[in-house]
Image 1: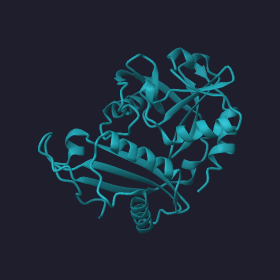
Image 2: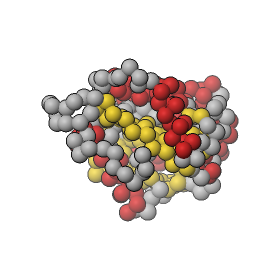
Image 3: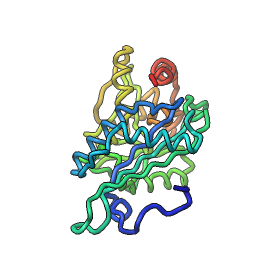
Length: 269
């Protein structure tokens, strides 16, 4: 389908109610990076949301569809793929429940997969709190808090914003998970803190521990940002990006650069 043609009905439940999930994946040299983790998260989320899955809906079928579209759009070398899954059309009680999915892909510049030269400047979004429940870790189509936080970041001339949970602790950023380095230990909030269960975050935790880094999954307080020596954000597209400043606090990136070179750059295809 041409990208400028309509593909959804007004009755689509993803459009009406945010009743759906999505995955954003990196195409790297003709392969989906960390594809196994992406599909595991997607299928787990669909099960949690009680989707009725058709027999043909599988990781293999979806991968083939993605690669065919990427070839058509000439982005097999480096590209971004978004897979959106919706629960049919209709109202809350009279929907057809027939699963729908949409695949989009775009080219990416080479610098997207490199460690950023200039550190990010971040802040905290003050006007919303992320709920902590069984759905917290899902990437749902209901993305309003992140959308508003992104608008706030632009208004404040920030590169990104952190969102707090209902306990007042940090959950994640508008498009990434958070790691901070404090007292020689990396700390990251997880789904139990309202954070999206990020694929890159999950991969990094395992690989960093194998490489000898201390990593703890726990609550991160705003005051922890003032005591941190390094801060970085991570997601499946960008890998990791180091943060240079939060408020008046300035950070280095020595260990972040080491993690990038030892772990992110060596992710198997």
